[in-house]
Image (cartoon, rainbow, N blue to C red):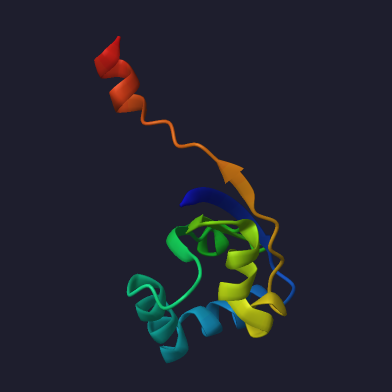
Length: 100
C-alpha cells in the first residue's frame, strides 16, 4: 500500500462537520477501516478546527491508489469535504539521525 496525505477543504460549516465527526457513525467507520472492510484506511487525522483553522481537516491514508480513498469516504463524506490525495513517502527523522 502507498501513503497519501490529504488536506480536505470543508464544504460545510466547521461546527456541522465537528458534529458529524463526533457521531456514532464515525466509530463504525473507524472500525470498518481498522478491520480491512474498506478499500483504503485513514491512518491518522489532524484536526486544526479547535485551534482556529476552520477550513481544513488533514489525513494520512494508506491505499493501493487514490480512487480507493474517495470510494472509502463515499458520497456522504465527499458532500462535506474535498478530497485531492497526494502520494507521499514518509521520512523518519529519528532514523535519519541514527544513520548519520
